[in-house]
Image (cartoon, rainbow, N blue to C red; front, side, top):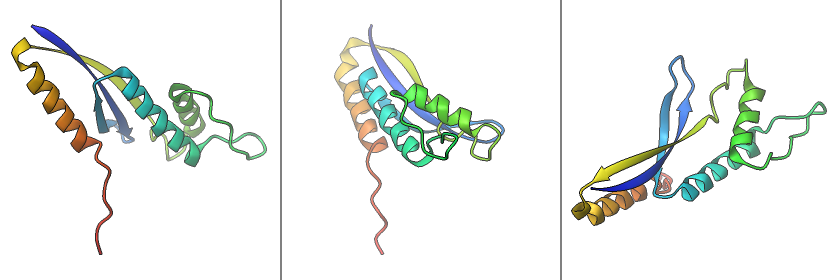
Length: 122
């Protein structure tokens, strides 16, 4: 048997029982981390916590610290939970003969999941 590791990124929809949504599947931790960094920088651009004078705080340097700051800033507000991302690691075992098929299937799934949305035509 052989093993492959995949990295799954999901955000959560805030409700009484948060549910993972918008999953992304990556074949390397670096790709998953880069995706999260981009997602949280975008979130920060729109929802950065503010200082006492009402100015947006600078980005803290990594997605984990940014997420923590955003969530801390939102506690008690209606927006609690948005901006909450999770990275999970999954190791899958498979027969060696299916390695190329598995890689192709994951690449195809990634292409579908990460495909940019096209605007609706009028």
